[in-house]
Image (cartoon, rainbow, N blue to C red; front, top):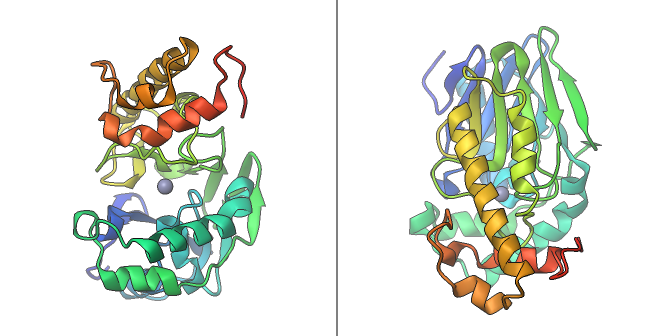
Length: 290
Ligand SMILES: [Zn+2]
């Protein structure tokens, strides 16, 4: 195996980290093909993944691409994998076009915090120039990719970071890719499409097949273990509990976004969208809206 960005995390299962948005890409090799998990943020960056796979694993055919969820930094590189079948959850596929238009609009209006998040103006130009390649295969609860000598399982157990997050399991190697349901290099990202009240339970159900030896690969950062996922599940559980409490006692949205509390697991300035989501999803009389 020649040198390249992919590091083996278990038998024939690899992970590469890239500086722009610190996003990770997975690679699972099998007898009859290979699966790439997430494709980075643009056609150019997806092309770099194709080149890296070709250089590091000569002769490997990427037969399948899996998107862990809808966000651009995980899906815009799909277009570079012309001969692969692209898989995603049905909810991710449903919102991909609208989400792509949204993110392009945001970057066109304000290129944002480039150096801090590892990207340049040229990366933004690449994002804006990327033509979306939508998934070919979608599923509701689970799907399996057969690589001949091993299987890769895709599982959706509920909403969290988005409404279409999935886990990608490689059972024979005891590896699980969790996309942005778990983040290692930053706090979990709670945006305007997240489900803060359901996220802890979703993560909890994925934990049922994560054991003490399982390698867990997050969407951003280095691989982690069961204890790390439990901790993040507990933090998200504490957050959900606190936001639910604030909603139910009738606190205003603005107060809930600014009132400090030592029990909050993440800085308040990162939680404005999460609060907004809970206010939209839960009525003060405890009836779930969304
Ligand atoms: Zn994301």
